[in-house]
Length: 464
View 1 (cartoon, rainbow, N blue to C red):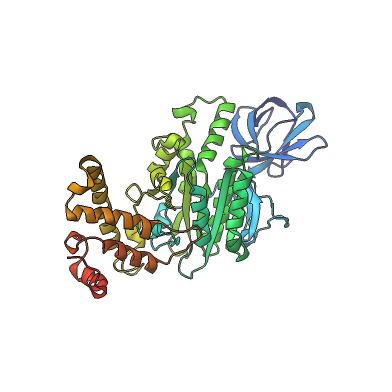
View 2: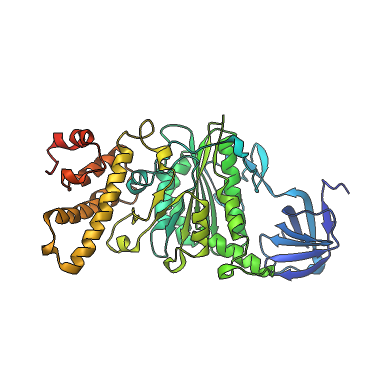
């Protein structure tokens, strides 16, 4: 039998959770695609996780429940798992393995691409530049997302991170250039999955969305595959078809839990919090699949969403994600408790590439100066609020009381935004100037005097 046709074996010696071990194999490689033939039942599918002499450990995507080793045969394809790629993904809703759940035919592409992706040559990488505008003031104005960037959202259980991710996916745009969104959901409840589909219906109808939904009752192994299929489809849309693609992956903590479960089934020695020791490199193999290529018009931008267990930002998932990515958008339980949506904490949030995507020639000439002044003033306002809690409001100076009014205006005028409300960048920055008008002119030390005069004096809003 030809090596590049298929090799079939029946020597299954062990079933362990989602894994099966096949003996007597040869010419089988790591990450090879597998078809598991189950007697008269439907075929299952898997990937080779490990080989050792004549043994192969296979990760079964549908799980091993109900398998009879004596009636099961394993066929090795001779190549890695590949999925069809092309524009046929757009407008479709699939499960975490890429199988349609929208009642349509299977997704058929113009080509097949391995889900492992192809690493970009560093010499061919083009630095991230130009913004991806989300319609969210707290992100566009203060932590601008840049094409080719990876910018995670850090949250805790109970906060509206999924609503925010869905809103970003529904509203994001790149100023009239070809654009698409690939949304990879992992471990969602059926109610949350339905909410995501409803929230993205408009983008799907416009042919700008590929949706992969892995729900909590789907096989846990499927969660490891979901982001890889999403990124494979996104890379082709970007680097072969010239689209700017935003990949939203929620929730990466569910992905990490799936990785930990498979690692435990394999009997690997656990590392921190029982996660596998290769968690960092595994996450990097996903996050680093974003970027831009010299001479290619498209880009892949990644927005992962992570819930931090017990709000612990030093937990392995957010901790390692922070090392790999270029900033973070952090959601605040305190702002959420005060009814602010989206509850983005501007002082904990940061886009390290913001200067590559904002400012003259990219957004608005005053963007970077205004953002710096807003954050500096907010930091001082919070110090004043802490002081007022200690000594009382009536003991504060007039300027300090203006800072407290500034903080309230910051939350109400700039941060607070309706679910589904999309703001233009001009509207966001105009609201920022309205907030800054709460401060005396002498306090606006990070803004050029001519800019302050132009933006505020004509309206009679400058406080002297």
